[in-house]
Length: 337
Ligand code: GDP
Picture (cartoon, rainbow, N blue to C red):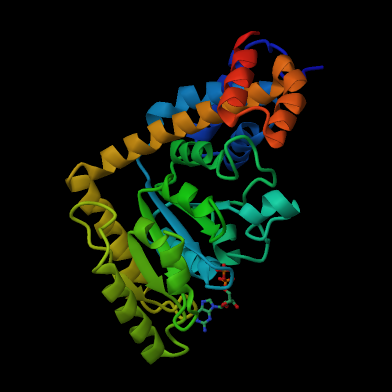
């Protein structure tokens, strides 16, 4: 039986690889789902197969508009994505929705994967919805979302929406995976300040205040306040001034205008070659992120390190060894294998 954990695997079966690549390219949903599942798997042979399929498909990737969206639970993300998604499929687009759900790593359940969300879109033949995997793999909860984006692009989806709730690292991760990053908020929720404090405001290319139908005056006040705050900040990209919009995801009011702003952002970035530079930066950052994670995993798996670690840490705790000396000794141990 093939197992993971460092055992050298035989290379992936070329026929299986070709079959998967052909299926994904043809837009076959089951094959697409299978490919993403392989990339998410913790089994080394699955990952090797996913990598081989991806290598085959790479020339067909990169053409989609990648939009990230974040906001607190209940702000209306799935309602907006449903409204926007249906608007886009009606216009002939193919829309993929990927969720990055930091709560799933903790609870094992998936808040974003809830079956009742985006029902109309989920049933649509031109849409593909993928909840986030329930384990926090190497590289964090968004680890396999990058691969999933590439797979759905190869399958012909021209709009990819990556959604996350505003918890921890996930927002930064999603901003680093997408071309246009949208921050969704509510008027009166007092979370503007929170977002500013957490540094999310600096990442956002488009600001959306939802549920404008409930209290238009409050929405307009919140929007004006955010616009004022933004005028003090450096824009996320040269030549792009982030717009602040009011929408009602429930009634659909403002949704087409919202999409026009997302397109305008993408086009502005593309025209100044900022988009290519952004994607390049993202790919390089991701590479280093994976290398860092891999090195850390190797370090902790190293037998010599494991043997030395308890005593060294105890000595640091007792003040008989400096952190500098401790780190140098452990890093030397790991090099010794
Ligand atoms: P999410 O957790 O951010 O995905 O939020 P949901 O899309 O599930 O929305 C949370 C609740 O707010 C649901 O009951 C929606 O029907 C409601 N909702 C979403 N958008 C609007 C809106 O524009 N106006 C009003 N009145 N309710 C909304």
